[in-house]
Length: 372
Image (cartoon, rainbow, N blue to C red; front, side, top):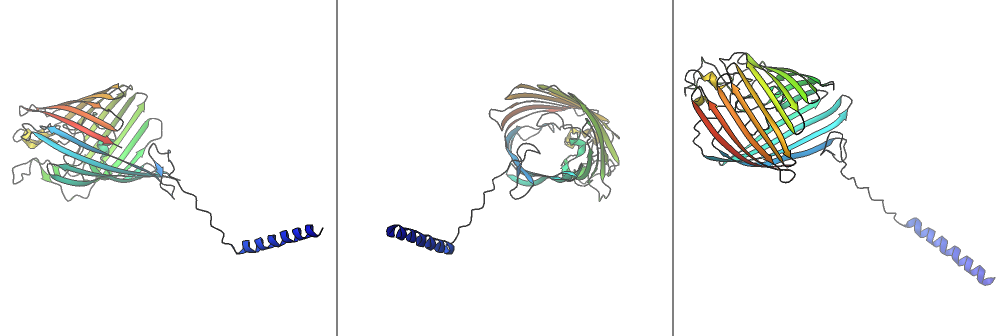
């Protein structure tokens, strides 16, 4: 009994000693849980949540290099082969609000050509509830859709030019989700091309088809509507140039049957004797008859058509033709080869004929592009 009592007393003493020491011990804090990047698929592939926020971010871009032989935009081009390299970085954000998705779109572009380097803010805009404000492509070009899946698709211009197609704007798009859409846009009259046709103005260099942009405070306007059902779609858009006080209207029909798609688009210039922003031309004035510089553009009308055929999962063929009232004919064809995902090799051949001056041009491009 004596031994048992001693053992019990010793155990009690050790227990009390351990409890006293434990009270003085430093308790290590639990490590903070790691916050991994979360996928945000509500706005499409590639978005992820910015850590610590409910804003989704998508990073993308491309690197491209291409060699160009001759020039489809002007006859008898003296430069043989031209090498051009371009890189773009895009940042898109999106978050949910009581008014719908709040989104931003930003694209930076870097170019290098013949020893010259340039940087450009291509896009920067904010959109919410159908409204878009900031810099984006003119809705006259983007709303109905661009021309064919061709590199030099704008030899016969289908939108603002001849320099920039991206411009500052305030746009509202109505889309109830039943196939019908409508659009109204106010576009900066001074942020796209800086040249306009005016037969009464002659510059010191003798080029009467170009004048400097005016100190203009009235914006340009674009209206459009469309309907899509199944494989078919139709859109109509009109643009008004507040400097020239003329405009243009385009109508487009699309058909998409999966492995094959085609489009037909026609445009009308409100005054065929003038170039305006929405019925302009990218060709040089050397391709225009003397004293008829307006023939660098559409004239009264222009038409475009093209098609694309998917041959297999790595190869696609595209073709496009265009013709104007001013007797400019442009045709182009290419193939897009994708040996691996994200890499495209694209050879293209182009032909342009200026019937009014009895001149023509053959040109070609070989492009390599990595998109991510």
